[in-house]
Amino acid sequence: MAVSPARAVAFEILLRVEREDSYASELLHSLALAKLSSRDHGLATELVMGVLRWQSLLDQRLVAASSQKIERLDDEVLIALRLGVYQLQFLSRVPARAAIFESVELVKAARKRSAASLTNAVLRKMASASAEDAVAQIAFMRISRSADAFMLARDAAHPSWLVQRWAEQYGLEAARQICAYDQTVPDTAIHIHGEHIQDEQFQDVNTNSELAAAGVQLACGRFLSAARRVLAGDVTATRVYREGRISIQDETSQLVALLVGHGEKLLDCCAAPGSKTALLARCNPRAKVWATELHPHRARLLQNLNRLPNVYVVAADARHLPFSSLCTFDRILADVPCSGTGTLARNPEIKWRLKLEDLRDLQSRQVAILKSALAQLAMGGRLVYSTCSLEHEENE
Image 1 (cartoon, rainbow, N blue to C red):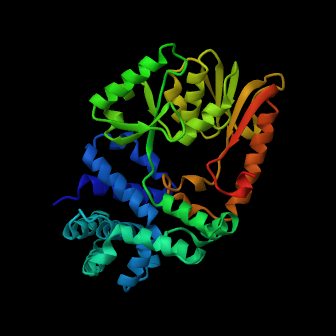
Image 2: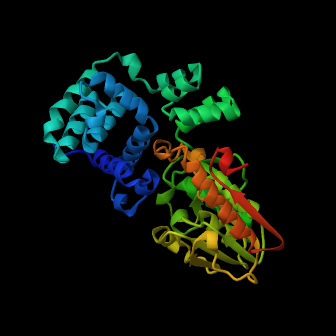
Image 3: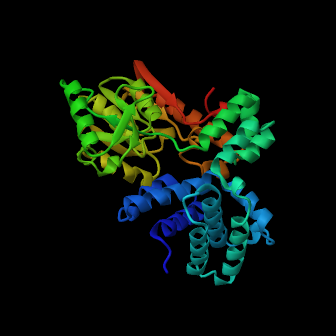
């Protein structure tokens, strides 16, 4: 019996996240997964994100159940065990025998057959634990009861140093709310295009009707009238999405782009993957929008902007923008590279990679980008500086 496609994909993605510092959200939306059924893609997403969100808690359970130190386990074995533990502890709809069997098969398929018996024994031991400890809601109850920052970090599966910072800067209750949010599945939001079209209201109604007919249930955005939250259905399978009349984009990301406003010449300093650039271009159809990106592989992500005739992509370091002092812009967006601590619900792997010393390096790069961008700002123009970070070094 072969390993299910969903678990095989989840295993490979988690292995790449562990070894290559890849981002799970990008891998889960790659073309390589296009052949997965909607059901398998949903399960793969649940497994990958669930394991990454609760990684330290899963490892705590493994330490208690295994006679072997997890630091000595090969990556393949540890990831297969994490997948098994997550299913046993958090996914009550998955039969224990399936979670155990497929984790063992993943180990065998990874040519770690000598660890198959260990994997089987550890997971069987955990499956026989009390059922009340295997309910996901218990974890959130523990978060709410955490008495201090150390306990909160342990119960909410966050690095202790990071939670301690939040507790000191924002207070323990705010830190608790941040951690609880990080451990939930965030809303999927879409932007309905057409702000500059004369019959926008008609188009909005028409788009909503088409999505509803395709089985997509929507709710109003929390912050923006042009945004909708997806309650159910697959947006990417609709004609509206394929025709480019809507795009998937967090409301906060939409808000940052809209704050830039209108102008004749616009610059997005750190553009990839391009969602904010696209929104800037659509909101300013008669303007010229320049988008710069340092890394070639991320610059390639901007190729999807080719359908927008007013976007010009430039491969460049935003700290040293390749424009003369005479070339200025009415509106500039400096959405700088940052720690991403405000996006842990969507990018949970960040919290396991980030180190305190990273913040100083990020700050120096952010300041350099900001100074470089300000040098290109026209008199009376507007520059929007934004991060998706909660850290004072990167904001205040």
